[in-house]
Structure formats: structure tokens, C-alpha cells
Image (cartoon, rainbow, N blue to C red):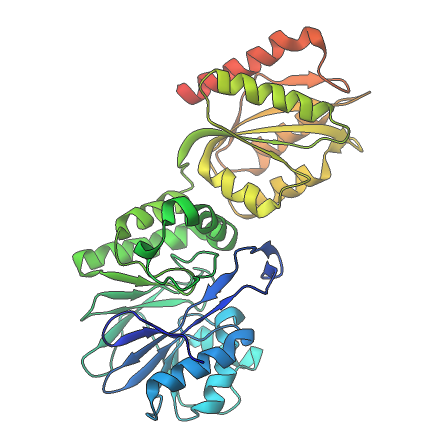
Length: 403
Ligand code: FEO
């Protein structure tokens, strides 16, 4: 049975939802699933915009077949060839072998490398600024390399103001029957997963996202709809979501707030982190707190992009800081998080060293990140007479937030 949604009179969502895959890219947990969005244009020509993951290919074919009603499929426009979109091409070409493939040159290479084309379909290379007409509708291509792979292009449909944005403006989360952003409470229910999707999947490529946002801004009021490859279609409040992308891609925090991440082997560091969180809240500071051993790093990364201040509490472990904490900081470095203010607490039963080493990582490995001078060292656990030290650290963090 088909499952499609009308986007405009001529454009339909023909994608699929995936609630079975546990790890996106075999890395990031997606307990709320993910959608693979494809769109079908019915004009003088018929055009499929992007495909889906291999697991969802039968549903894509059934949806397209239903809407075509016996017509041929004339074009397949491929904005991005990562297999979560490209793998389904195999099944689509088996069904409609006369369709012309339109993509960047890099995408054509990836089609061949992955083996996504079972037949030698006609290929059209899309380049920046080129226009392709399908009847009443026409698209113009814009290159968006590294948002999120080098092959990525987006396109803008002129008559209805539709931006086919590839991975940009996507999010984790299955659609559950809803398609448009105004059919769900995005700020409340979806923003955390959208942030986690952006920061972990595209976060490293802030300058490239900024370049895309500049191109999108040039569209001005002509931009009416954003059709991404994951998550809802945007038909209202576009500037709100574009604003989030602008902040994230400039590595600017959304909130003047603290993310407190602690690692704790036997509870001593956790106890100190709890006391610090309480002291910060008493000073009017917004605090999110996570156990680094129990929280998937993709959540920590998303929260790190959100906040202005990050507090790290770690035991000393093999004369280094806690291994899960190192994984987190290495991920932060790999994704290019910048311009945050850090504070550290360290623990060590006989030779506390974690604070010094975390401080070195923050100041030497992370761009534009600074470390508050005030710190705290505990031996095994926070001693009763260290309450003034804890208060001083909380004062320093709160003072930094409040300026
Ligand atoms: Fe959703 Fe970069 O693929």
C-alpha cells in the first residue's frame, strides 16, 4: 500500500520512515527513527527528487508507481549520493530504466563507486546556476559541497519557491504521518533531535553551511518551502529554523547556560558535580548535567553546541583524564566546536592530574576556547572543608555567564 503526502498541487512526498535502524551511520542512536524524504513532481515531465535508503526502496517504488499512474519517470534528480539516499536508486532504475539521472559530477562518481546504477542510464551533469525546466516548473542548481559530502547540490524551484535542500535543514525523527513543520511542535518536540542531527552530521562544516545560507538569503521572499532529505517540510517560520542553522554554523551558543559533564568511577566526582550544579542553580544559572559514561556522545555534542559554558569534572585515570571524557573532547575537536568557555574539576586519589590535562586539551586543541582560572581539585571525594572552594568555582562560572 502506498503512503504519500501532497506538498503542493504538483509535488508529492514519496519517501519512507525508518524505525528499525538503531544507529544512523552505524554511530548515532535514533530511538525516534528517521525519515528518508523523496519528492515526485508531476508536470509535463515527471521528476523524482532523490531516493531513499536501501531498506526503504520498495516503499519508494510503490509510492512513485501509484502517483505516476502508468506514466514514465523522466528524470531523477540526485542532490546527494550518500547511501541513505542513493542506495534506493538501484530499485528505481530497475523499474524506470529510461529515467535520466541529474546530479553533480562527484555524485556520478559515487553512483559508480557504490554500484547504485544497475543500467547505463543517461546522465546529466548539474552545475552551479544551471536551470532545468520540466514544463510549468523549473529548477536552478546551487552547489553546496560538504553540506555534507562533496557531491551535494541543492536546487530552487522558481514557480512555487521550493528549496530542495539535501541534508541541510534535516533532522532525526520519523514523521509519523505528519509532513509539515506546522503539523508538529517542532521547537518543543523536534529541536533537540534537529540539533543533534546537525551538530553530529554536518557540524564540522560550518563555513560551508554559511556559504549555503548566503545563497538561500539571496532568494529572499521567493523562498516559500524547504524540502529537506530528512524530517518535516518547512512551510512556515522558515526564518526561525534558518536562524538556528546560522547560529550552529557560526559556532555561536543558543543559550547562556552551563553544560556540566562529569565522569565518575566510584561516585566521588559525581558527588562534587551534583554539589556544583546545585550551587550554580542557586546563583540563577541554567544547568544541564550528564554522566559522560552513560550519555551517548552525540547528545553531549548537541548540548555543547547549545550552551555558552562547559564544565568538565573528571577523575585521573592512568595518569590521564577519564577515557570517555577524552572521547567526548576528541569528538568536539573533530566537529570543530569553537568559542566556548570551560571550567574543570579534577579528582585523583594519589596524584590528581586530570584538570591540567583537560585544560591543555581545551586551550591547545580547541579553537577559540578559554578556561576559567578558578578550578577545584579533590582527592577521592570533595572534603567537607572544600565548600568555600566549590562556592568560589560556582561564583566564577556564574560571574562569567552573567558578564
Ligand atoms: Fe542524509 Fe549525508 O545523507
